[in-house]
Image (cartoon, rainbow, N blue to C red; front, side, top):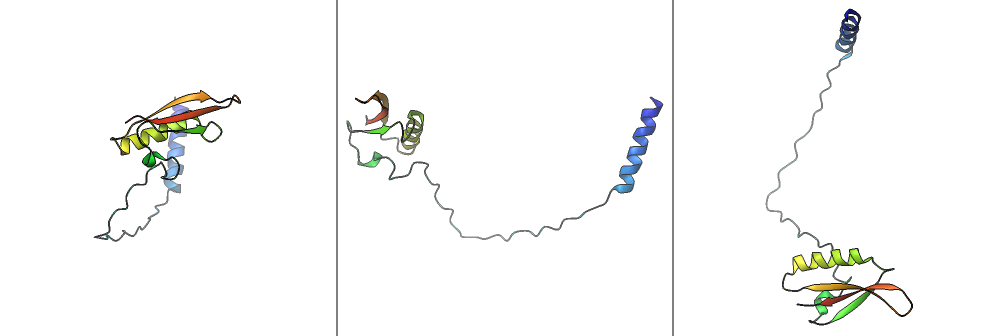
Length: 108
């Protein structure tokens, strides 16, 4: 126990002797008034899926090579949150060549 106390005391003395005070001067930013905040960008790009052009009962297909089913569903959820008056549903299907795809329907 006595050796440990002496070791701790020696380390503490070394740190006290080696400690240097460094001061960092930071300039404060200027405050600007009257600048409008830009609108938040939607994660869904307008050209990516034709949500706005669809009527109730219309659908479109997205190949699984273009986007996974979960990706399509997340983009639809983002659109549904931004536009609560519209609703879209998806189904995962297989075409004649055995390729999987997601079909999206507008239901409301």
